[in-house]
Length: 107
Image 1 (cartoon, rainbow, N blue to C red):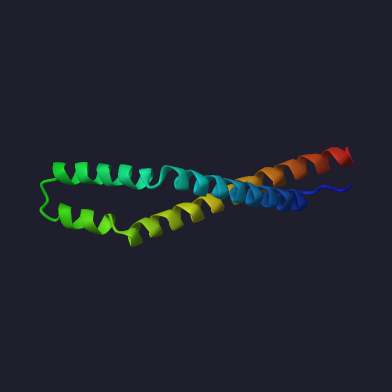
Image 2: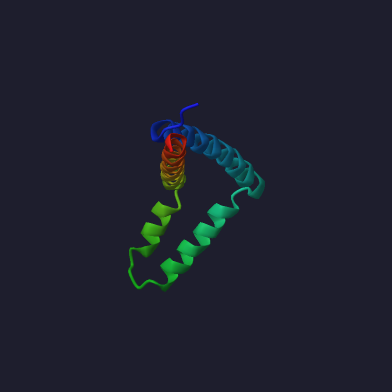
């Protein structure tokens, strides 16, 4: 069986996608179990920061950041970033392994 850098990258990308799917399921289960604990922690941190600020617009900004729409956008960006990071790292690892194995086969 010939294992090259390209085929290693594809195997790595598949492994990264599978890892992402598993992580997404675990994350959703965790969020369901904590029932908004993460959101409350973020809200508490935002409120503390707004109270320390001397800017009169701090409360207005806090209200915008505390909206469900903002939280949805933050979650979507975090999920997409995580997907991209996992795919890139897994593909790179697979490509390196494929290149090393291909070199070993020809030696």
